[in-house]
Length: 225
Image (cartoon, rainbow, N blue to C red; front, side, top):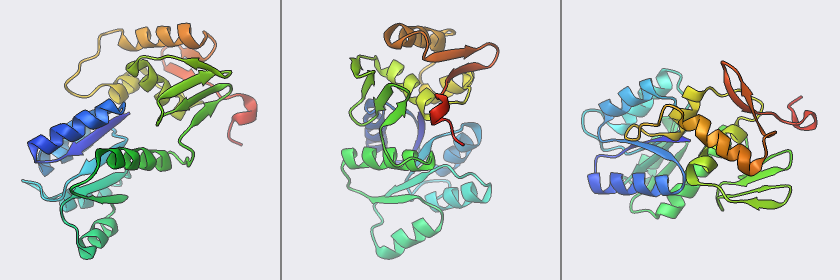
């Protein structure tokens, strides 16, 4: 899934981007508040990591504008402002979590996963559809108890389809979820990843809806009532 990092410290921003990418996320990074607003207007991000002390527009202004426009994307404030007043102000402005610098990258990654999970209405980090299980923390996949070895992009694609099981996701939607700005996917990249997943997991798991996209169907017993 695709995240936006808003951080004006270049060394820190690059480190956060690299760390979250290592955890399997597609990450865009901008360095000021106005660039963040433009990015948020253009892309449907799963989560935003937002500094407060930004040039051109502060993090709180970005957050206030985001919520005023009805955008409910989860926002994790990441800042050196550590007073109780600062924390209360950030959360009351519409942030979903608040982490103070310096921080541990493992904790940031865990908080990101938790926020994304809650925004999708889930508490258990492990995804299960029929006999397929995906653990995003351990980055492990099994089918019928058998461990399946997936490449990072294959794992990310399966994760996205299982998060939205029962919904058809277009190729364009999947590309935007899996690839950041600085990585242009090939014209048939999604089709290639789907082919590899079918070969490893079975041809019956991912269904093609011609002209619409791809879907992992939930068995009738698992479908929402």
